[in-house]
Image (cartoon, rainbow, N blue to C red; front, side, top):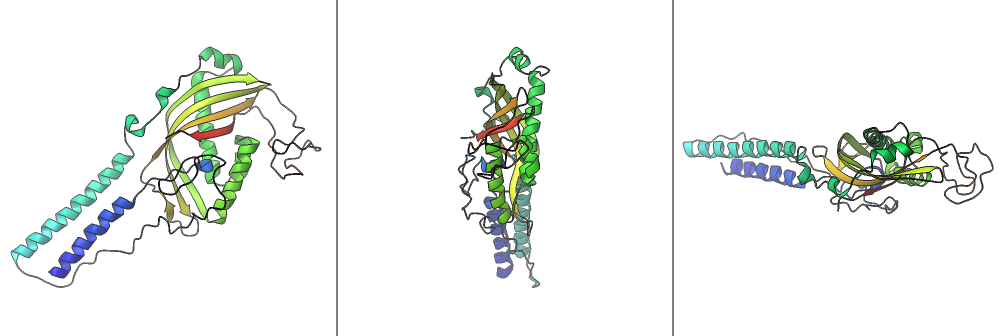
Length: 300
């Protein structure tokens, strides 16, 4: 009887500790958001490629501890009653934990800490004057889709896609970070994006380039796996995170020729070249598509 009781108590402790170790991860393209327990930089350029924190042992949740029922027998109504009470307790704990996980993905906008009210949309007239054919709603939808495309391209190591969605500086930064991630057999999984609110709070035109300042609140699942084992090494896929972003998108109002490298300023002799012969930076030709030039997390 004592052996059974000890094993059941151990099982309850294991369940409780497992629930306590589940933490949310905040990564996304460029590591703009900190891991809750990982210490990644919140800026695009602040993430160190020399960081050794990708060890899968950091947040591995052991599944080796299991509950085994005893083959021994016991008698007495008191022992049976105690076993029933403990079984019901374990059952209640499991049910409550499932409900808790389910509720974590359906929290209210207030609980999410959304900062939508801090920003105000520019006028519809201003948007139409700078971007003919666009309404405020159409612009918001397109920019949200661009954000999702960037996240998915980051997740899939799709450098060609990223090249068309980001400015030169941001693209080169992302590629450097992804190369380190790939070398450490990591993959950042992001899925089920929900638009929690968008504000286009500034738009202007200068030197044939239109700059759009956007606030965007997005909810999504965000975690990291080891590609060799498919095990989660950072975060959880049962709880969504919510990020508040300030983003800058740019679009050229007309086609432009590039005669200097945006990274080092060296002259570009071959107009069809996509790589600078001096600093080896990738050169992205201007287009009439919206591209992301800056993304900052403003959760804190």
